[in-house]
View 1 (cartoon, rainbow, N blue to C red):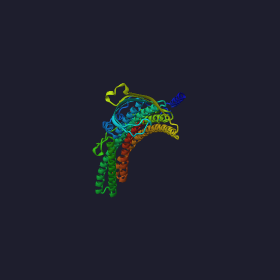
View 2 (cartoon, rainbow, N blue to C red):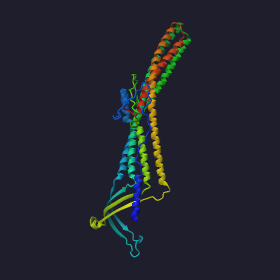
View 3 (cartoon, helix red, strand yellow):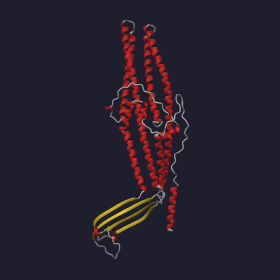
Length: 467
């Protein structure tokens, strides 16, 4: 009867192990292509190639130097690297559970036994003795993984390692993209500052001209006051831009792992062009985006947790053996009578726990459902970011063409208005308006160029980095 019961228990455990479904990625209904508009065309990135330093495609040596500095010194990246190292160690520790544990125990003692200890036999009195004990024993213990608890624990640790590796790549991508965005924003501000500086120089010369005409009686006091007000307003805008530049510079210092007080970046007015970005297919995001990979590995972790929780329904079986020597004297320690050994099997089965095990399984299943929902959310968010980048760059491309036309027109208007004023055909207010329109057009063209660079960085990040 005992043997039959033991076979029934083993069969139940094995059936429970077989009931655990293998992990499978959920299927997503992805579109076959992006919504493209001019000037975009479908490309095909080489996903099998190693992803390198994508920022080098902008051809900016100073940006590349800052990116390398950030990758080497960023505390945020160091934190993600440390978590990856922890995940590797956790996997190594968990994987050791599939192997037997071998131990060696030694004991040397001298002890006195009480004569008044409880009797084990009424007809055999106790005596107080003082004696030595020398013991050497080797033990071997092994857990029989019938319910798959150890296997699922290893699978969970492996998935957690994959998630940590993806998190490290995602942290690196976010760090480098954030640095590039701040860098191009700072360079756009540099160009705006240059526009305002040149505008202030022109407005200062115009003020001197109006002042000379006023002294000759050819211009009114109102003309002089209007030009003075325009000059002061432009100077205020310049100070605000300098403040904005300082904030971008401080952000770059922090991203590069340098105290803000020790970091400076000189102005650089070189023209910068964004590289063409191949789009590939929407399904490529599942392989390219590290945050999607991390969310997918989180599903694998949650799936393994279900198996671990489910294993608590079945018996826990352990094999244990021991072999050693025990003697009162060192001289007889290695004699045959000193030999001792043991071998045994232990099994534990919870018969009633008030529904705790079932609740743990339900909790694990709910965690898996949450990870699936999060995976779908991350994929949908990634597709939104790519579409935002595509439509944003297309719109900025068209806006830049219109801005160039508006700038050329504003320059002609200023020349014509100035000539009419000098000929007495218009008031100076028209000249002021033309100057303001030209300044606004120049700043708009500069801002659009900066936005195109920043949006290109955003799109590269949305696509998962280099190609």
